[in-house]
Structure formats: C-alpha cells, structure tokens
Length: 97
Image (cartoon, rainbow, N blue to C red):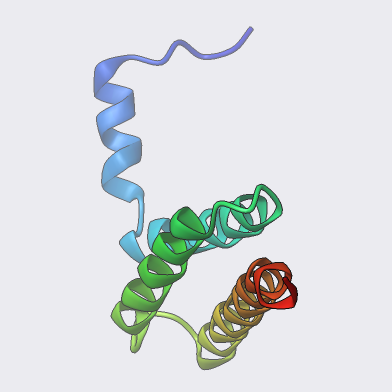
C-alpha cells in the first residue's frame, strides 16, 4: 500500500529539493511550451517563454555541471531559431501581397 502523504512528509520532501533542479525542470517545461506556442502561432507567448529561459539560465552558473548548462543554452538557441523561423513565416504572406 502507498505511504500516506502528510503535510509533515511533504514539508520534509520540499526541504530536500534542490533549487537548481527546480530551475532546470522549469527551463525544460518552458522549452517544451515554447514549441507548442510556436505551433499554435502564439508568438507573444513563445517570446515570453524564451525570455524566461534566458533569464533563468544565468542563475544556474556555478550550481550545475558545465555540460548541463551548455545543453540548456543549446535549448535556448534552438527555441530562438524556431521563433525566428515562425516570425518570418508569419510576416512572409503579408509581404507577398
């Protein structure tokens, strides 16, 4: 049978949580959401997610391994490129008219 989750147990687990792990999880989620927003052509929301990723990554310096930070910086570069592609595709039909 599963162990009951009490407020005390939850508080204990939260104390164990490393903030850098939460930030990495947040950046991962934002990266995934960015692609979804781009697919939905919601460029404003995609831009907000990209800006949030860019703001969060520097906070991880010295708290995660260099290769992990490099990989997440690559995620940021990838979503920026995808955003640029989506923004230019949105503008292209208007220019052709």
